[in-house]
Image 1 (cartoon, rainbow, N blue to C red):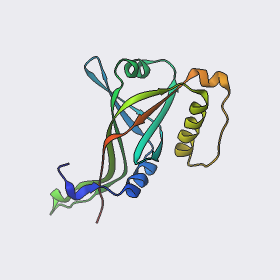
Image 2 (image 1 turned 45 degrees about the vertical axis):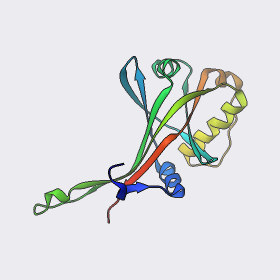
Image 3 (image 1 turned 180 degrees about the horizontal axis):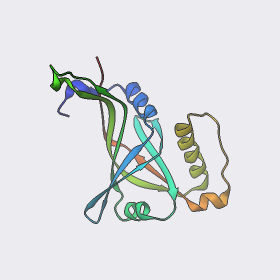
Image 4 (image 1 turned 135 degrees about the horizontal axis):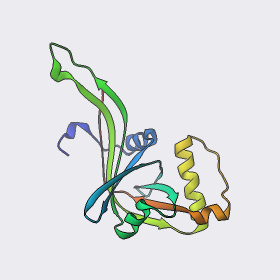
Length: 161
């Protein structure tokens, strides 16, 4: 990381940043071409590892790419705010943010009970709720749930001082 002064290493702060993010940008490789899709997500932090979860239809371009090439890159960001400069100091214009980046590999979740638990993790994060939901078996069969264990995770932030 070039800007070590912006690096975040405190796990609690990283959890806080991830909790504030609404969208995960999933970077994939489609036959040698980059392909990035924004997705909603949920996450866990267990055994010093962040795992991100997404869901969607059981077929489509994203699923085809991940089955063919499961290696991915994850990117999340939040806390966006323009830092104002002035006519006298135009170089003072900047941008506040917090961001997370990590390498990973798609792991398809097939077990119905694990799918149910994971869908609840996603809903809890997206809806900011502690409610648990039940999912009918026919719906689970049509839903694809994917886990991404973060590797080489890095976090950084630039804030207004």
